Amino acid sequence: MASTEKHPIIKALYDDDDVVLSAVKKVREKGFHVKEVFSPFPIHGLDKAMGLAPTRISIAGFLYGVTGLTTAIIVTYYMMIVDWPQNIGGKPNLYWGLNMPAFVPIMFEMTVFFTAHLMVWTFFMKNKLYPGAKPQNYDPRVTDDKFLMEVELTGDKDDLMSLLKDSGAIEISEA
Amino acid sequence: MHYEAPIREPLIIGDKSYHDISVEVARPVETKAPRIWWVVFSLAFLLFLWGIGCILYTIGTGIGTWGLNKTVGWAWDITNFVWWVGIGHAGTLISAILLLFRQKWRMSINRSAEAMTIFSVIQAALFPGIHMGRLWLGWWVFPFPNQFGSLWVNFNSPLLWDVFAISTYFTVSLVFWYVGLIPDFAMIRDRAINPVQKHIYKILSFGWGGRAKHWQRFEELSLVLAGLATPLVLSVHTIVSFDFATSVIPGWHTTIFPPYFVAGAIFSGFAMVQTLLLIVRKVYKMEHYITIQHIEMMNIIIMLTGSIVGIAYITELFMAWYSGVEYEQYAFLNRATGPYWWAYWSMMTCNVFSPQFMWFKKLRTSLVFTFIISIVVNIGMWFERFVIIVTSLHRDYLPSSWSMFSPTFVDIGIFLGTIGFFFVLFLLYTRTFPVIAQAELKTILKSSGENFKKHHTEEDHGEH
Image (tube, rainbow over the protein chains, first blue to last red):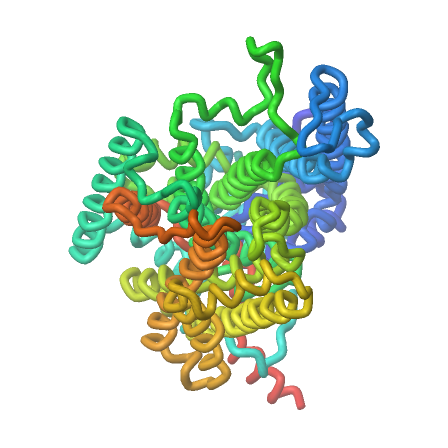
């Protein structure tokens, strides 16, 4: 990870996904830190090239699913067996284990419900996305067809500038 | 970069750049509606109003305004419910199952198909609601602590499973759809010139900026949601079929129902996608993205699922005979040769016979023919549900109770109203939402775009 020290940011704009991907690799090879890449669509292998850690959202999703399943088991057990057991169609609700097959649809649906919704909430919260949030891209072109790479200026400025120019950037600016 | 064999047809036709995709997807949102849009919208809106009138009349006066009687207690409302839920299934199939199978041709049709899913599930959910009679007590279907000695809902009942299945399906489809929409709303936001429009899309896009980490999470989330939506969509129509299959009515009490209903749902859903997209691609000039190949692929699925449905019909007849149960045998004999023979044979013709034309490449790549078949299939699938529901009920165990069902103007009005409502929603959607998942489509431009593919092929020739 980057050091806590603040470094000036150099922004390089590209007009092709393959070019920006190779630029990220080149810049990192030279020991610079790529702070962010804005792109209009997901680029395959970009997260690895940037050295991003794998996302843990699926792990969270699994835990949400377990929560949903547990909730369904508790709800059906308490409501059908404990609180008011009824004899419906000659099938008494005496033991949860015996009635479990009838609760499978509910258990399945609640697992899916919890996983999907809580994962989407996690996605929004971790990414700081909410209705009316300020657009996180200051350059509006990166949702259309341009790719913007932010590099921390840690070493020699001219080195980085020429490296970015060689990597195929169409615009280079300082933040 | 992903390589695609030159023998595969391009999925994006013409000399397109990333910017062209943005411009062409945003165009319907940024321009004024064509006159034809207003004409269709007005018609749909009138139907919708008529439907609301009929619903209010039903709620004010009671279910007696429908054509139901003591013998046939379920008819058009449940038919319409199952029909609309079924139509919804194709959207999830395209966006989730085809994602898991990495079918790239889903990308220019998934957005509209999912919109169709959501709008048709809304129509479906109306019917059980109205049929309750006291719509304002609809929340009783959920397990809330209450004042009746805490009388809970019955978790053993397929009708309650249905409540959970449909609610989960609707809300999960909605968030799945919305997560995919966010980058596309951001694209429209960043292009918008009109400040009001810019502000609306700023709210809708949740501040999306396309950061690398966000795309990483986005892709993972899409994959997991697709993985969840796949068994979910199969479970929904399975549970809908349980409403019938767990009863002891001859003609309903059939173990074949779950797969048979799911196949039928996908079948009718794809037909509805065809109906809608053939119009969308024409009116909004999306022919370069929704190509003949896309239409052909969907026609092949229609042919396949139509044939599965056909096998299910024949299996049902065989099982009725082979079971040796005379009530079961009579139920099916009555379907095919009784007073509702015309409904049965309409169903057979529309669902089993008509999709077989799709074996011919000339027909399955013909737009006019596809459009006609897509409507025929949906008529057939409506009849299928009508046949299952009404013909199994109208001759019950006591011959003195035998009766027929004829719809009143209210039954017809509510059904037409939901068609109107559906088209109102869909037409509003095509004017305000990006109808193609452009961010996703841009990822396949280089591997499946016509100009890029041609370029690759020429390069290959140079090397050899």
